[in-house]
Length: 163
Image (tube, rainbow, N blue to C red; front, top):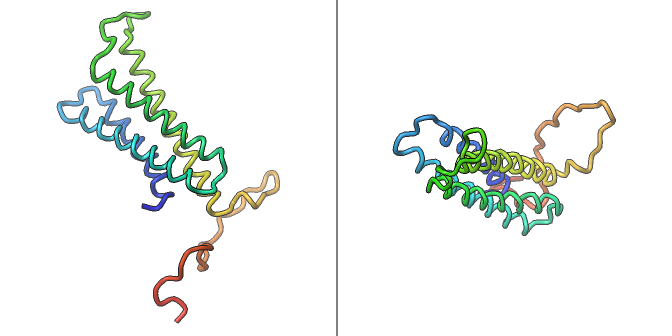
């Protein structure tokens, strides 16, 4: 799978976890599906961080991808604690339990993962297309460029091209 596809896929897989984890009556199958999607987030975040590390993309993008993977580990740990109902009987404040706090942290972490995954995907896309090299004047929002018929540097010619 191309790296940019994997980067954007993490956003959508992470987003898919939200409806699967927030339905009021999930039934017997959805919790398992939610856990499977969570595992996919963990694996994609790892793969993206590892593959970005092997590129010459700017360090900040690599660091955000690594942090996204680290957050996915925290997400998995919180998910297991929630699955085991840890803290369900331990009251905190205002009628809320430790389990409720874990749910909040799990949800906030999910938002952070999706947000950071989007930042990495966009930054990589812009770096790959060398968009950082072109500045615009303040107040200017240029129209998008038309797709080019030339291929990016480093890509081989398609079979039969130029004949």
